[in-house]
Length: 256
Image (cartoon, rainbow, N blue to C red):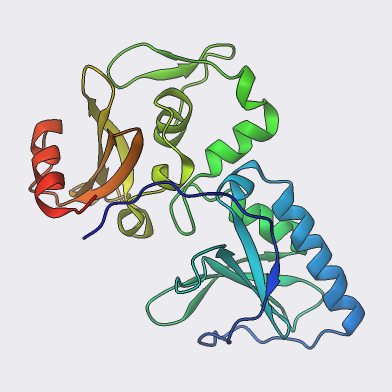
């Protein structure tokens, strides 16, 4: 297995993609003008999102369907797709599953991109809290205070930070690493910062079932700074009780 590290930036472009598995939502046909307007609004909504810009997310179009993708990863499945609904003039946002696509929400092109940006559970990326914070306050003006091993707050507002905000704003982990491990976020695991090493170069996050009726641990996210690069990997539930235990598993099972 290979660990996740950072990569370079890109300029958004439009590309073609084969149609993926169908979903039960009926699709309407767009005129050339409607398609052009939808494309313009999707492009603009993506460009206005701090998180989508940093994650280098763009889109590919196949007919009337728009796929949200990471540029430079041609073999990776789309993060989401947007299709014109047969009911009214709205567009449908769908999330990929093993069986095809699931309905997530609908609205104007701007609205469905905002739904995509606001995701905090991990259906798409789990970075919605960071996107909203960066829309309100420029990154260079943000300061996070550490009150305890597990408590972090924004200095100006005293608002508690989410786990994702803590990893990004306090520890300085890139967004593409903060959104790891994707497999635990896709299961809507609820993250909780568990521990960090004294030099803050190794961090352990525990993921539990979101349901209060089944709060068992489903795994851990381990983040490590090695040779000036951050890595983020999943750790099995029986291998990540401590930072030291997670680090041993990481070094034994992942190729840097």
